[in-house]
Amino acid sequence: MSNQSSTSVVEFVIVGFPGFRDIESRKTLLTVFLTVYLCILLGNILLILIFTSDKSLHTPMYVLVCGLAVLDIVITTNTIPSMLVLFILGSRSVSFVACFTQTTFYSCLFCTESFILSLMAYDRYIAICNPLHYPNLMNNGRALKLMVCCLMAGLLCAAPSVGVAVRFPYCGSNKVNQCFCDYSSVLMLACGDIMVTSYIALFIGLSVLLFPLIYILFSYVRIISSVLKISSSEGRLKAFYTCGTHLLVISVFYFVAASVFISYRIPGTSVDMRIMGAIIQNVFPALMNPVIYCLRTKEIRNSLEKTLRKCKVLPQNM
Image 1 (cartoon, rainbow, N blue to C red):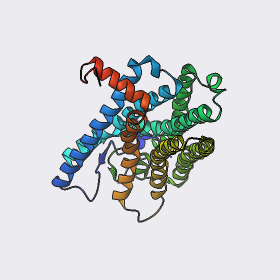
Image 2: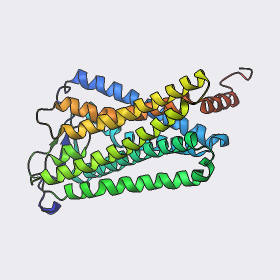
Image 3: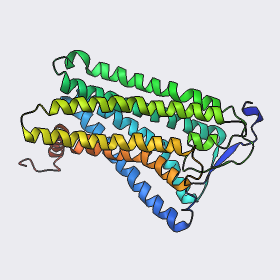
Image 4: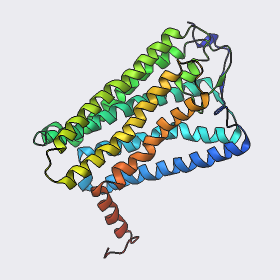
């Protein structure tokens, strides 16, 4: 491998969806993703504002939910605005350094979200299955420290692969078949032998997905078994519905991401489907998390109603 000084490519060209490059298709994509991005910002910022303004919500569970909201805003802001520029222009040039900077942020934040989702499952597992020990095992300070640990672990998982990839020579095509600088899409453009690096990155990526997913499923199995002991059928139904919606978003995040990772190693995979999978994995959880953890949570709904009454948006006698 040689370092960047021998690299002839000084910028990459992001080409986006091969099958959606006409003006009308790009206008449609622009409208859809701009709307989605605004909804993500509105939902997650609203969740953060509700959390910070209501002291009764300052509990470990909502500290983790608020941290996830901040992470979702950062993840989508790292990718969607550059995608919107792409849809406006049809293609977008990005410098070598800027491309790998986006790749580093994307990889690090992706790993961090995977770890935080497992941390949230741990919190719910302790709260439901070991409620007497919960105050000793989880508090706001510990939740914050664990989220910082998730961020550091995400950086440690992402940095080696990106560090190796940036030292490859890039001397051929500079066209990235993706809507943003995704690690695997950029690595495919390297001139050197990338097989070992590619499979190491695949191993790290699948490990970051597989081990947290196994723990999450284990936690939810234990949670559901505890829920079965609830005498009220209404309580069981509500708990199952809550667990089901959580698992839906978690499944999209983990299984779609795993499919995208593996698709780069399968010849003949549709580029459009691969790009759409990466975008769904990036956008869908960030869009749905505020709905699941905000609008469907009684404490946050009550806090939102209280705030709206103070602002005289809702009448006082409701």
